[in-house]
Structures are given as structure tokens and as C-alpha cells.
Length: 565
Image (cartoon, rainbow, N blue to C red; front, side):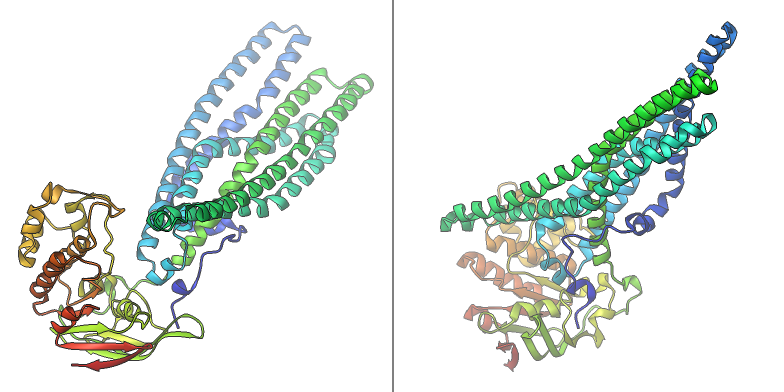
């Protein structure tokens, strides 16, 4: 059976329960700086909570005509303002530092997990969705940490501390808060939460879908233009955009539910004014107590309003974090690492009884067995759809077979450490991938990036110095990831130079000379002859001239092998 990471597909709407608990392993390395940031935020909130009490003290001093006490109250108030400002700015600074560290570690981990993920898993996902989860949603999380998390902590702390403080001033008036305002506010927020979990997850999924559609359209622009299919793709994009607009509209309506908190505030204000006035007139409650209560409740309601404005962003960040955790959880798998079985630098590659299916019940390879002794030269041939490329990926360890085994020097590939495996067996695909940069940048995309001298040696070994010298800026020639600056044959030459720099024991080439002009094709053939040396060479080929140059052939027909010489 295939591995879990290969078989799973990312969830469009991953679960949002226990997100913080699931994220804790990634937060734990930064717990000290997070604790310091939270402590500073709590201290700043406490300072703000004391404002109404100091004002109540000042009102008392005025009623008693105590000028000295009034000056003391004013001085205390000013000291609290300065202290809160310093504590709040310090908390924001440390929260930003802590948040950036956490976000940076998540970003690095996401990139690492994607780089190490099985090829079969990556091919099962829409590239736009992977891109959004590992970039845009992490950026949204970073923005929330910098801008909104300090406010969220401050507001939440103030709501708690103010409620406790008000109990000391008047339990009667606090009952208004407990039995009038809080139930209405809680019901409103629960109503919001019920709708938000579904609505915000749907909006995030539609954003990922439209990003994937856009990316696929850009990648297929040549096909769309040459076939005149731009209108059809535009209609598909418009359908995705329409679904996103509808999902966004639903999210906005869900956010409007938080307006119910304002109604709760109005009811609580009216009740406090009536009850507070009655307590002053009938029971002689100090006017300063009512003043403290009104001021504290006003700040409390302002904090609640601020919280309702943050709750939408909090839910968006929660969904983004859930989608990121889904990516990290899905791509997590046991690592063999450097403790894998050590294998010799040269040896035989053998496959026995391989079975493989992309879809259950539809076999691509059935009972495939073949062997490639050290230093052998073999062609892998067969009609289109016979499974040649799939077999090549399994032989290179990029796919895991559903049944059977592949061994190098008698050791199953899954027992060999990734670094050793990549240095022993190398696959050059039909379309060699390049990145935007220079030719030198692209040649250095191998383990242990080589020096210019090493690159020059590899070019000399393959007889490709003349090719590089003929380029406009030689090794500094600009290369585009879109492939506009290189022909298919030149991409293959880059792949061959990378192979020479890695020096693998087994080199597999997928259609190396397909769609290549005769001059470049001959250059590739000559480079292959030089590159062979004592390594095994496996070439997927259609050109009869290429097949004739190789003494052995493994023929695939309907997913089964026939070995010939």
C-alpha cells in the first residue's frame, strides 16, 4: 500500500477545533518570549483597569473639598497613563517579536515539509492551494499577530479585570452586567461563532480555489492562446470568482451578527442609569461609586465593541491556522535521516513484482520486474501510456509502489537515508525544472552547491564548455522559470550538468531527446556517452537512434515488462 502522506489529500475545510492545542508544539520553543509578552500585556491592561477607580477617588476628594487629595489623585492618574503607555508599547514590541518568530518557524517548516513531501502527494494537490497555504495564509497570520493580537489580549484582559473590580464597588450594579449584558452578549457571540466556522472556512476554500485556477491559467497560457480557449478559461475563472463573492457576502452577513452586542449595551446602560440613580436617592450610595461604574462600563462597552471588530479577523486567522496545520499534519511522516542504511557509491538497482495504481482498480504497473547491474546501459521503451515514466519515478524513489520492492545494492529504497538516496539515484525529467536567475544559479541546484571550478570541471567532462561559451553572458546568462529563455534541449543539458555534479550511481532520463533539434540532440547524446562512465544509465526513449546506442532494453507493454537485448 502507498504511504499515508502520499495517499492523503489536503482538506478544503479542515477542522477548527483545538487549533491552539494542536499548534502548541510549534509554539513551545518560543514559550519564554511569549510568556514575557503576555505578562507585559496583562500589566498594561491592569493599569488601564485602574483609571475609573482613580477618577472615583478624585470625585470623592472634590466632594470633600480635599485639594491635596485631588492633586494626589491627578498625579496617580498621570502616572498610570505613562505606565500603561510604556507597558503597552513594550507588550506590543515583544508580542511582535514572539509572533514573528513563531510565524517564521511555521513558514520555514511548511517550506521544508513541502520540499520533503512525496512527489505523489504533491501531484495530488492543486498547486495554487499549496501556494496559498504556505505563503498568503501565513502572511495573514503574521499580520494578525502584529496588528490585532495585542489589541485582542488587551481587550480580553480588560473585560475580565473590570468585571472583578466592579464587584468591589457595587454588587447590585454588577448584577446588571452579569444578568443583563453578559447573557445577551454571549448569545450574540455564539450565534456569530456558529455561522463563522462554516462561512469563513468556505471563504478560505474559495480563495484557494480561485488562486489555483488563476495559477493554472497562467501556466497554460500558451495552450489557451494557441487553441483560442481564453474565453472558456475566463468563464471558469468567473465562476470561481462568483462563488468567492457569494462566500464573502455570507461572511459579511455573519459578521453583522456581532451588532447584537450594541443592543445588549443599550439595554445595560439604561438599566444601570435607572438602578444607579435609585440607589443614590434611596440608599445613599456615593455618587463616586456610580461615576466609577458608569466610566468603567463605558470603557467595558468600548472594549466589547473593539472585540467584536476583532472577532472577524480572529476567525479568519483561526481558519488560516487550521489550514496550515492541516498541511503540516498531512505532510508529516517518519524520517529515516542520516541513520538510514549506508550503501556503496556504486551498485545494482533491482525491481521485483512492482504493482502501482493511481486509482483503485486501475493498474498502471502489474508484476513489473527488471534489473540494472552496475555500469549497465538500458533503454526503457514502450507505447505511450505503458507506464514508463511511472516506473522511472518508482525506480528513483519518488513514488512508493503499492506492491513489490525496489532495491539498491540489495537494500530497499525506503531504508536508505534521503541524502544518500538522492546521491545514488537521480532522475532527469522530460522537462527539466529551472528557476529564475542565472545559468550558474540553476547549475548550483544540487546537494552541496558547487564552486565555479567544479562547474567548469563538469562542463569539461561533458564536452559542454563550447555550449556555455556560446551563450550571451555564459554562466551569468539570465534564465527564466517560465522557460522562455531556454529550449527543451538546453534544459536537458542543465539536467545533465547537475547529474555530473551529483555523480549518481544510477542515472535515469525521461525522454531526454524528445522534441529536441538535431544539433542539441547530438550534443545530449555525446554528453550521455561521457557521463556514463561506471554508472548505470536508464533512458526512456522514443528515438530509434537513442535506443540503438544502448545495448539493453526493458520494454513495457500494458504495464508489464519484457526484457530484451
